[in-house]
Image 1 (cartoon, one colour):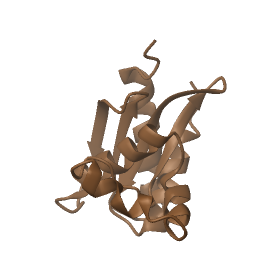
Image 2: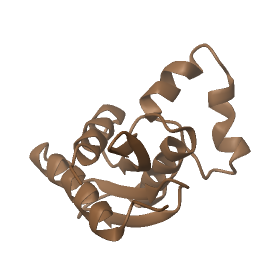
Image 3: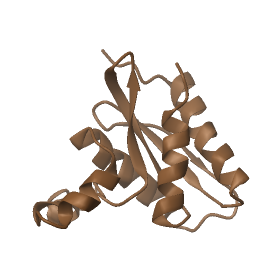
Length: 134
């Protein structure tokens, strides 16, 4: 059952962009459903030309492995598998900081990925988006 609908995805993405604005950062936020399918991308004013692609690829990685991409970065330090994910996925999944799963009632319903800031800023904005209720 698909639970990541457009209304929820818009709230999640907007919360991430609101956090980015508080940090004075141009940001793109992408939300995917539990299968990694695109639901919405919101590109903030002044973002770089690749942020739509990187935010989606980060969100897809978080959805595919059902974990924050920050965890994947840490895992790559001891397991080279994680460094090969972009190659194996033909660039569709990017396990770099900036994406987190979205849960509802203890169930995984999708993921949000952010791009436009530093890896740490992207992660903070993704967390803000994922924290939205509903």
